Image 1 (tube, rainbow, N blue to C red):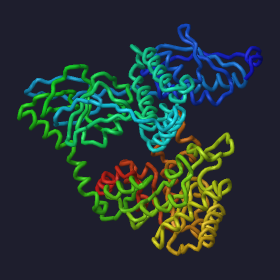
Image 2: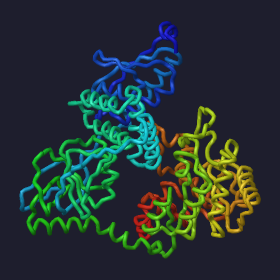
Image 3: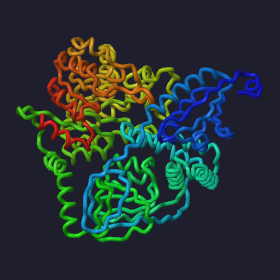
Image 4: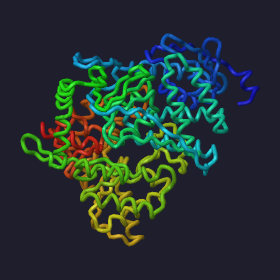
Length: 608
């Protein structure tokens, strides 16, 4: 936009009030900025005489807006009125949906030994030696430029967001990605980025958003790792209670790979992303603002009671062990029976398969007791760059050797899932545009290569090939004919391949009789089916989808009733403890869930 356009364009403004008890913090601010960037108007946010670019997340956070504050949003230039109206409404919804961090109530408990009280992050019992966090940083020769390090960090955050899309981590990584995008606008070197982080720390110091400084350092640490800075933490190999000043959000993911029994943080808040992720990971954790917590080789952390006992007595330990046993007994019992078939109380067998994303998660699914793969999300292979035919064959082969029953979904991108090397046409409503099997219209060569790789890796093994986003019988017939032509072209034997569809587009429900004549199986994708039934984007930041609506269950029942081919369900609903009895009563006999949910899903089935 030229200076003339700015000077002579109309200006629109609105005063936005911070009504959330959490303030205008990183995650809602990131969503606000992402929405703002969709408009061409110039935007400013002003508070207490300070005016910043409302399209730059770092700048917006520097206003340090707390509950009860407000800021004036000013939009000028092209689409300014639409931008101001839309963002005002959007901001209100963000404030309404931003729930206050839940304060967990402490269970009353008395111990003989002296106890130190703290604030509960996540409940549970831990008994283990104390280990003080310490790290060492070494520097090796950087192999990439600063710009490349930022680019790789952005890609990594995008992948992490996709991987944890339906978990709290996903929103954290999406916010960090937006924050890094903002920071790179003012930093062209590592030194510049470090200075920007220090400025942010100063701006947020003392305010409600001070806990989000950890995200800045998390981003800085990630960029530095690509520039040759290696951080080493020698975590113990035996169970331990970690004591640290604070942890960066990404460190929680790393910590889960070690036998951490509990965590005590000295300088953080319940609003920090580290605290949120510790709670999501169910790691017993407290906040204790004490810089001289004693060392101990047999400490007791009763996070449910908010107590840390450095030197518990024998009686204390016996009491804690009893509580711990009750807490984990049910979970342990389910895990020990994870390889056993799941049968309802009236002896009806229900298969429990896994949704997997790569070789590692497929191996995890095997160890967790999965009876097969109900959904192989092949998108993971295509994230950073287009995979070669050879790499696809190698990866599919590794996964195919693990199970006898495997359902592979062809590339499902578009909508909310983009590829950095694929240019999709601009779409006003991408969720209703080129995605799933519709890639056959725009990128047939990519789909051909993938299907060829799947056929070659199958090598005579029975594989189910599933097409996503099928909306009509004609669309399925075209995809199947295309696959057969690939087999003919490359002389692949596909007698072992069966062809089915993801049921996620509502139009399928009205054509089940016709689909029965051509498909070999159905798999209900409840996440997408739900969003299309209600016309609400499932990643929408302010609108929410009912997860167990009668409408969704009625749709599933319609599918099961009308289908004369096998029907499974692979969406989130399949692992929902409250939904499982309903699905089984409807006639669903195969549930496909995340690897970590397999044991608990089987145990839930046994109680139906």
